[in-house]
Image (cartoon, rainbow, N blue to C red; front, side):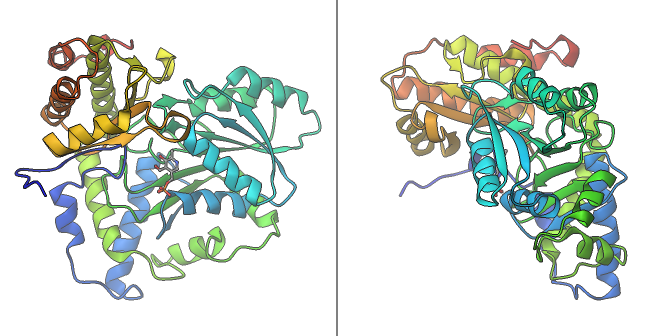
Length: 396
Ligand code: PLP
C-alpha cells in the first residue's frame, strides 16, 4: 500500500470533504434526545435548515440518505396509480423514476440523451394536454450528479403556472442545496429533497424534505400507508424541538456548525463561489481539448463537471492513475457513461487553491495516463480564478 502524506483530495461529487469545524462540532457526547438541552439544538437546526432552503415552511429532517428523502416525498403525497411526469436526465433521475414505478405510480418518462437538462418543451406540452389534471406531480432532478447538467426548478414552476396546472412540483436538489442558488418558497416548490453529504459539507446520514402548504394538504388527503416517513408525526414533534424517533443527534451538531459556516460566508457568496469554480474547471477541460458531458452551456453545473475521455480510452483506468499517484478520488461515469467519463466534484468545502490542486492533479495524470490532450488546463483555470467578478465569468 502506498503511504500518503497530506490530505486526501476527495473530489467526488459527494460525499464531500467535511470541514474541521464541522468534525469538531460532531465530536460531542451523545445527548438525551428527549431532554431540554436537545430541544434547544432541535429548534436551532430546524430554523437553520429552513434558512438554507429559503423557506418559512416546515423542513423535515430524517436520519437517512438522499434516497430515503426521495421515498418520503413519494409516500407522503402520492398513491399507487397516480400519474407523475419525470424526465430521465441521467442516472439519478433514472433511479428515482424506478422507485416511483416500484410504488406503482404511473410514470410518464420524458427521455433525454443524458447531456442536458429536462426537456422543458415536452413538460409544457404534456401539462397543457392534461386538461383533466391527471398528472399529480412533476418530479425533476435539479443538479443531475451523473451528467453535471442543471434543470432550473423556476423554469418548471413557470411552465406549471402558464399551464395553470395544479400538479405538485418536486425537486431533487440532493447535490444542489448548498452549492447552487435555491429558493424553495420564491420558486414555488412543493417538496424539495436534499441530503447532508454534498453541498451541506456534512457526513452522509441526514435526508431533508422541505414542504409547501399544498404538499402538506396532499399528504393529509393521501391515505396510502407510511410510518417512518410520515411528515405529520415529524412536524408535530418538531414543534417541541424533538423527533418522533431517535434523530442522528451528533450529525445535528454538525448541521448547526455547517449552517453557521454558510451563513458567515453568505449564501449568495456560497453560490457565487461554486459558479466561479465551475467556470474555472470548465476552462481547464476546454484547454485540455476534452469534451464535457453536458452539451448545453445554460445547464452547466456549478457543483461538478463531468468529462468525456477520448474514444478508446478508459475513464476508470484514468481515475486509478489519479488515485494511485496523487491520492485524489474523482467520480466515476455512471451507467450509460461508465468508463467513458469521469466527474470532478467541486462542491462543498473548497477554495481556489484546493480546486487548483485538483486540476493540477488531473493535468499531471492526463500526461501519466497518456490520454490525448493539450497542456494548459491549469493556466486556463488560474486565469478564471484571478478574476473575482462572477458576472464576467465565462459560461462556456
Ligand atoms: N439524487 C442525486 C442527484 C444524487 O446525487 C444522489 C447521490 O449521489 C442521490 C439522489 C441518492 O442519494 P443517496 O446516495 O444519499 O441516497
